[in-house]
Image (cartoon, rainbow, N blue to C red; front, side, top):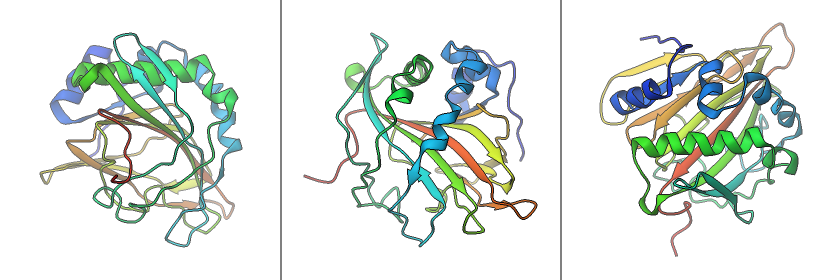
Length: 250
């Protein structure tokens, strides 16, 4: 089944759909209304995706992924987001069969991006919206931010080389920053404990997919170049987890 992005959805409707089906899609204008910044203010963050660095940890032998990484703690009741000292990104093999069990030290976010008001309000207001669906214990979300670029320098780029997966968190926001000279990159969302699923393509810059990671699994299909020239797909993934960051067993 194909679905369309909702251009007119309200914050209340987004909440209701997330509760009802475990995911909701937002057109750029709807995301902008949710976070309190215009699409033009969000788009002003886009040049930061030209400053990502190669992912040195790809275990499939590819060289198609560029990224940075940031972490912080969101106090929901105060709508306050505080950065924490730079740390490794870690997932168990239960959630990432390809890269699980590995401490991955990615380069931190560029200071100009991490301090931008639109960036910080994006992180905060998405987290507050998720807390309206399911409040985190202690009123705090442990947040990880991942700006990605997937390119076609290898001929094929894989947004989710681990396949259909959960991230091991409570909620996930996947935001398309832009696409250039590619085909593919279709998003697929499936029930974690059922057979139903949907597929669609995020193609408008700053359109978004919001997921309840406890209820659904997701993936994006590989991308290929068009017109014989290299292309890329830029996204921002933000995860919200209660109780602490994912970390290796003590």
